[in-house]
Image 1 (cartoon, one colour):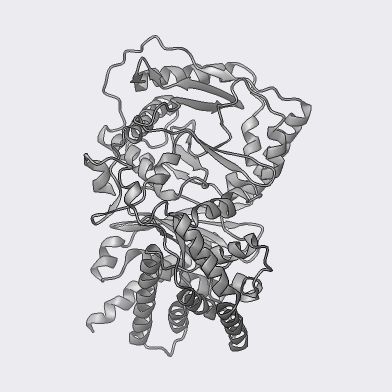
Image 2: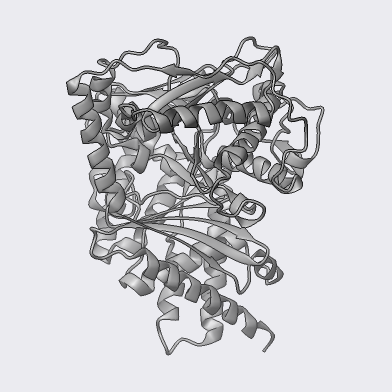
Length: 570
């Protein structure tokens, strides 16, 4: 992606969308076989035999009928999963999304030209916004290079959701509204919203057909800051977006504003600016996955690096209208709801343990030299870390992308395999030789690599099982026993993975996410030539989890694994 962002291309960003293959429906037999393999680490012999019988009954009975219905759906839709996934994974979820569903992270500029420094917030903010808006223009003009694996183009639809997109709360289901249009498609909103001290301001970033320059953006931001620091704070209506979704939907009907088309609440992309000149972002997960924010974050970081964090153009500021404040009409009940939302957010946020650490002894360069896939290296280290810390296997979700297919998003790689557990057990057994430990580790590597390839090419099973369960629901059929079997949830099914993980990439961009379950961990990481950067979260109120200890054990596992590879020449 680094080279693709750097070079210009005559290809249009969205030109391959119509020619991408449809998302396939996997073989029922293959999916159930893979599912059975995935539950083995979490079952004794008796439990496994029971689940095996349940799966066999499903395959020979209702499963085949559901499969046929799913195949019929796939004939009518280029992506049979798309609508279902958006609803089940995001829009139907009622828990507060800002903390539990959204993802975010710090901007990378802190590592080079923009270290923390008071008094730089507005100047840096204007430059950062200008680069972001240039990226917006690349999308509008369809000049953002198409992402590819080799010569194979990937789906770019999620990039349409980065700007002019907002989630709107609903009583039982939220919705996503998207106003983005390319230049060839027509008009697209060109304003930004700035929130400061409980108030909201908007201004158009285009003036007389041209994008504002950093000095012009600086003038707008300075106006907003001076106004907010010299006048009383606003009601802080934005806090309501951190509420439980149904409560937020009920309150939203009571808030009025001058322009109802300006949606500010659950924005797809929020740039966060701190007083010490450090930046971060918080993004709604519903419309797109992390690789979109990785792309724009890397683009901005590269531009800031190339310019040494400075603006070298003209300081001239045109006569541009001042920002307009959106004044919300709120009564006592709404103000009470805002205070309640703030209180519950701060309570939950204070319970979150968040750590970011760097392992600097080696990184991608050495692991690849040893012919080990760097991502698999981290995943297996995490398995060993969890096993050592908790004394049992940890069911794990790793993100695989399915962007080879039309509107493809993600699939689940279940990293806790039989092979991984056997290796973990061997590492804890002093009687196991180093050669045997190495052999079992390489078997675990091979299994994980194959799973990742299968999942990326439409041969995963978790989304397939979800589709079958939703077909049963739509047909008003009883929930098949496969989905109520205790091993289904114990192995992570139904969103119960104790390890929620994702590789952010191989660039200078890091993200963070909260655990999927209360007794679990969030584990996002990125890999560089000479280091591994890990962001790990856990809930302080859970007595059995500790993010710091898990990271320490993961780094210990890194060293142990590399030592195992060093015996190869003996």
